[in-house]
Length: 92
Image (tube, rainbow, N blue to C red; front, side):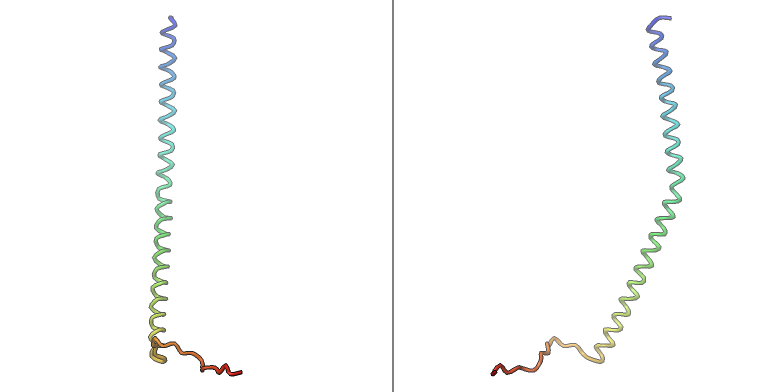
């Protein structure tokens, strides 16, 4: 067997082994990412649900604050006037 044929055979074998390893590695990583898909979706949905609950609580608290403000304004109306204490005499 000539040297050139040995080099060609070795190169072909190396290319075949490299292709085999690369394909198996890419399939394995793809399989792992497919398995993680439903887990990530569940986490994303849970996060969205938590954010939605937080927004609903904030909106409820905002409505309560509006009702309290209206209640307090009916008891003590707000004006733009600033009330200061009685004037002090500095004759001392």
